[in-house]
Length: 135
Image 1 (cartoon, rainbow, N blue to C red):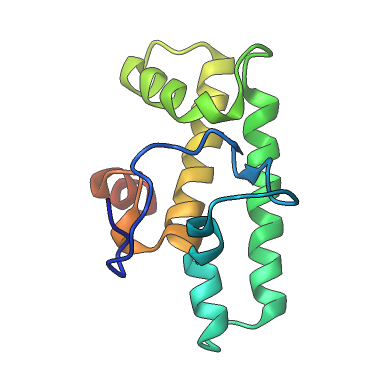
Image 2: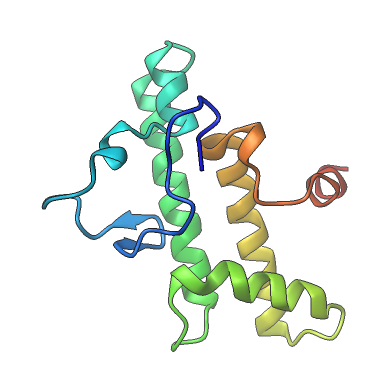
């Protein structure tokens, strides 16, 4: 698999990734990790956003992740949240209030990550979902 910049990338999720956090960051990690730049980093490097704006986006992402974690069943790890989101979104409108709360929080997180961190070519939400949510 290759990135949008045609660089090599992993096709499977990293076993050291816990949600959005690297559990190996302070220790040894593969060189590809150090070479990866998200959309926020790329925009900051080009001077399109300030460092303060970049850190604000990171802070917002952490807050949204914590919102999702608070809505997850206690036995479900954040790394599995996307699978649960897809399963429950397909189940609608027969969701419990707790499930509906999780789906909304997960949608908001995914939409934010798509817009600010992944960039337009790496979206995790279908374009129809994003367009209907914005109208």
